[in-house]
Length: 401
Image 1 (cartoon, one colour):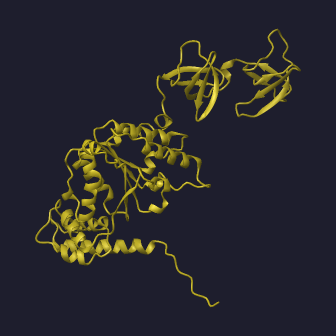
Image 2 (cartoon, rainbow, N blue to C red):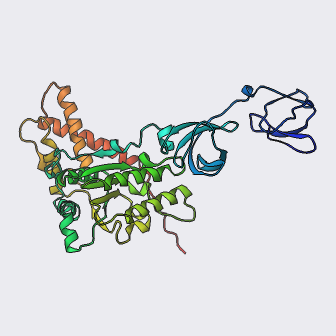
Image 3 (cartoon, rainbow, N blue to C red):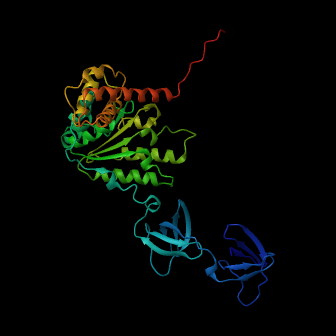
């Protein structure tokens, strides 16, 4: 029952949400009132009071946003609702509560807000699971080639983290964000982890899908929790993989949730103070697609480009990646580097997976030159197949005016 007016009309709501009106002909000493459960006759011409237990109660979970004299303001799935205060227990702002439309607040679930991603997605966004503490397992020797890139990384990221206090005494402007650009598979994430290890910094690696939530405000909450945890560490690197998926260009056609997320990201970048020893690294192979506000001074105003490796870089990558493998004899890394022009580091290291398969197939316990060459041929076929399946933009033929 939704409402009874002075003319005896009752306004009914079915469990399906459908609304209609009937005349109250029940009579008796207790007139019908809003909130009563009633039975409607098949011909829809009469209503009778029924036990409250017959009405299907659909519980909701919300967060208390304000407590007034006789009611509370509850945030339920992003919508604010006035709900009478419970009589069996007290609630305060920030509590997570459970209730129903008819009974109001029925249970106190937690003293603090339980976010929707915690209710519906378990602990997928647990900051503890994103945090990687340094253990000395990675060094720059694990990253073959790219000597100029590694030198630049040491200057812009490792040194500021290690000498944070000294730079503050000089009065230098803190480096907050560094953008890694370049094709996929060039080792941007690996180098980010190596920097954290060498700088003795906690490392948070986040990809866009991990923090994008369909629930209103949850993505912003996740980013805030990551930044708050990082600021509590002596040294920290927050690493956003494919930042263009998290902070794309904002425009008139952008979704409201995307604009909110970018705005929250900018606020957090601007919120660092002098005591925070945190650097944010972001990667993208489409820098033109990230929001222009991220490139302003004090945000991602430093950029390190990762090109496809040169011939010498390719040889160094092959030599480095072979160190952890069982190999036999002197392998022709130089000749292989000559034959792999345009290959990314990820494509180069994939050669070893195929080479290892050839070795075990023939009963060998170490990779030989024969396996190395066969692995290259197999990786090259796969690479060409992938390249041929990509869409190409065919230029239109010139036409005479």
